[in-house]
Image 1: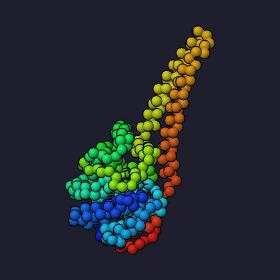
Image 2 (image 1 turned 180 degrees about the horizontal axis):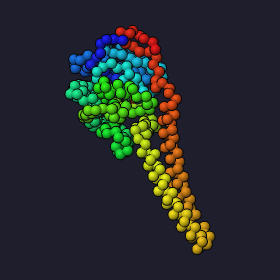
Image 3 (image 1 turned 180 degrees about the vertical axis):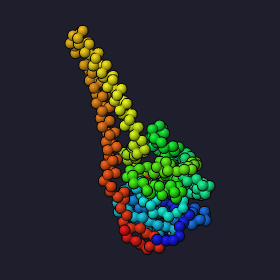
Image 4 (image 1 turned 45 degrees about the vertical axis):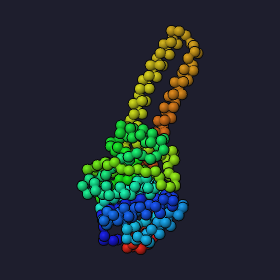
Length: 319
Ligand code: UDP
Ligand code: MG
């Protein structure tokens, strides 16, 4: 272990980013050098199948003092990679950002300035967000829902370029939750949060690692990880519906008694039945989301497996 603690750790998850890494290095290090503070970049290679790991090794040999590389042995997902980066980071301030240059490294100074002012959480709001339309619409809808049913208050949940103080990162490192949403969790731990507008660019190269499916999964983590309102809402809906169907049964019984048997309206009944079955299925699925979270939690599998760590003082320590 080294005795030197840098002022700033920049944590960057990397998954199949060979197309952007050279440009990232070329912009990130000069931007950090310009700040004139002791810093380290902690790259976490999330099981890339391209040349990302080799490029990270090269960069490590070029700037060993300011570079640390954590190599996963498989793909564990962006949030696991960031959690690993936070666990390995030694800085007094920690900033997380994406590798794809959607978050300009030149903005790091503004985040550090806010941390210097004593804020322990620097959230960011993307100016002129450069993403495809459906992503923006989806993200706005989820934002609304999150504001409504969870205690998390952040303006722009999607931007990963954020600054945290050591105390917030310490709390994050103590958290044993398996599937989580780091910016939201951190905002709950912060005592003096602040938000700043930040520039946002198009992905420099390569493609987004998120499909619609994985975005839906991520957003389930955001909602079910921070609120049980969906479950409670469900029992309310269940109550209302049972009340209504009791009335319907009563009405049908009276009709049968006073008007005699009849088959008309059978399709209306089917319609109502299908609707109710739909709601019941949704409810089972929703329960499954929570049960799945509990299951992932009780298995207590490691969140990630580290293959090797490249750092200057411990040489190439194999894990
Ligand atoms: N990423 C990762 N593991 C994954 C998916 C993504 O480490 O399984 C990294 C990726 O390399 C990038 C960041 O997470 O640095 C954000 O990914 P991406 O830009 O694809 O997401 P988007 O900006 O489209 O939300
Ligand atoms: Mg991106």
